[in-house]
Image (cartoon, rainbow, N blue to C red; front, side, top):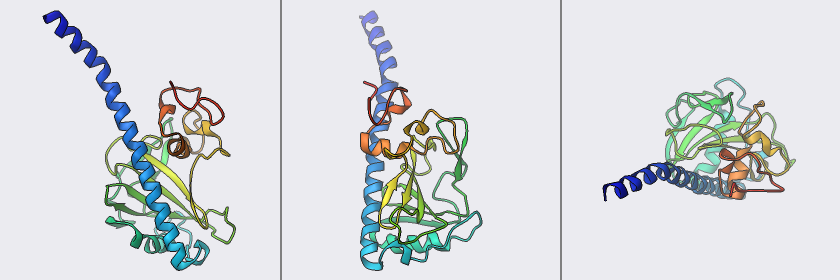
Length: 225
């Protein structure tokens, strides 16, 4: 009896961490899809009322503390979301330190960055807005960038795990890492923006399997198993 219980305990110790990690990843997928839907719906409703983004006076955020353009974006979309906290560019909505990437480089975002306009929505998701340099009538122009942490200040505070990037075009929100971009930069290349391109993979393939195997691609294998 004791031997049997011991074997059960060993098996449980071996399998439980994997089960917990799998559950956490599924939760991340669900939270990211919900955030993407919430933001996209809010943007479409705001466009219906105010016109496309080239009419929103999205002056660029730059590297300083002037977030007028990002605040204008927030003011247009926020009525269509359930806002929990509006931290503006003062910090408090995100983890205060610099975020990690899946590789050796640090992310170019910190929770106290004064050139991002930040807020949280009702489910605890934290969102940061950075207004881009140009926003015109071209549907492919980047008007803003969004940084989304699906579990707010909680760990791991790492792009590709719980934090993800989006581009805001003139009339839609587009996840980083779509099929016309290099998926490898999601997890395996320590380039300028490592792990930013994981967003589209998570949304469309509904997994974070790039954390566990290296033979995935848009045109081939999309799951480890």
